[in-house]
Image (cartoon, rainbow, N blue to C red; front, side):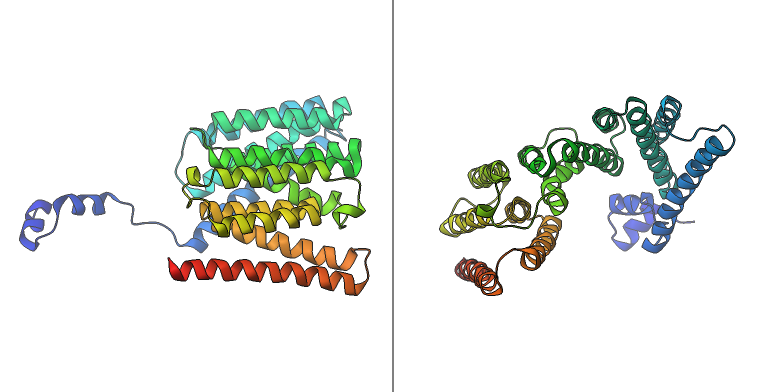
Length: 336
C-alpha cells in the first residue's frame, strides 16, 4: 500500500492539504436530516417535561407551580446546561440539552412568580438565569431563548403597570442593543443584542396604537431615544467599518428622522434596524426591518383615524422620499 506522502509526491498534491482533507469530517448529514434531529431533540425534551408536569398534577396533586416547581426547574436548567457545556457532538444531543435548560428556566420563573404573586419577581429571576446561562453555558440559541423569556416577562410587567406608556421604557433597550452591536465585548452577546433591538418594534405592535405622532400624548420619549440612536449610528459609521458620512447618508438620516417623528415609535424602531443593516451589511436585519416596516404601514393605513385622502397623500410622500433616496444611492453606486 502506498503511503500518503508518497502518493502526494507522485501526483503533485500538497501533503498538508491532503492531511487536512482527510482529517476533516466527511460524514455531515444533509440539512433535512439535521433539521429532523434537532426537532427530535426538542420533541423529546418537551415530552419529558410534559410527563413530569402531568405526574406532578395527577399523582402528587400539584395544581399550580410554586417553590417545588422552581426547584425542579433549577435542577433541569443545571442538568441541561451542564450537558450542553460538555460540547458533546450530535445535533440531537445539543437541542435536547438546550430544550431541557430553557424549560427549566421557564419553570423557575413561573414558580417564583406564582409563589410571590409578582410578575416582576419572575422577570428578575429570568434575567438572572439568562445572565448566568450566557456567561456559563455560552450557547447562542440558549442565550436567545433565556433573554427572550426575561424580556417578555418584563414587557408584560410594564404593560400591567404603565399601560401604553410602557413603550417609552422599552425604548431604552434600543441604545443598549445598538452599543453591543457596534462595540461587541469578548463574550458573545449578539443574540441578546438582537433581542434588545427587536424589543421596541415587536412590543409596539401590541402596546402602541397606530397613530400619527401629533395625535398621541405617549411615545415622545421613545422617539427621542431613537433619534439619538440614529445620530449615534451616523457618527459611529466609520468605526463600524462603513464608509465615512456622505451627502447620501445625511439625506437618509434626515428622512429617517422625519419618519421617526411622524410615525409610531415601533416604525422608527424598524427603521433603526434597517439603518444598522445598511451600516454593518447585515442582511437578516435588513429583511426583518423591511418586514416590520410593511407590517407597521399596513397597520398604520387600516387603523389610522384619518380620511382616505390624507392617508394616501402621507404614504405617497413617504414613498417618494424613499424613491429619491434610492435614486441617490444608485447614482452613487454607478459613479463609485
